Length: 152
Image (tube, rainbow, N blue to C red; front, side, top):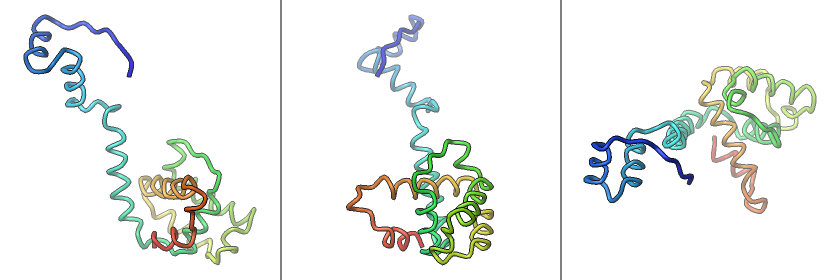
């Protein structure tokens, strides 16, 4: 936490002191209740991912999830890129053209790209998140087949 000085009126001071343990606690509580973007962005993102996780269930086969994990391994994406449907579609095509990743996993690249293009931006972001969670797990805990099967 950081310390900041703010100016408040005497009536605001009295309100905070009469409703909270101290002024600092009162200001923190008011900020939390106001739902400033910084105070709830993680909650909002978790909620969006929970909904999109359900939406993504059954959209891709085990082989397709394995393709995503393999082709996106080591990929770093920023906020704008990771919600871009076309960027993921082009990534898939490049992964096949340059590395043969779709062939390796027995994936029909044209059908996969068609599925990707049918996704929403939130679903694309959640797909990246699934892959990142897989690769960020402890090495001993990683089981690609199990992970991909759970997402089908």
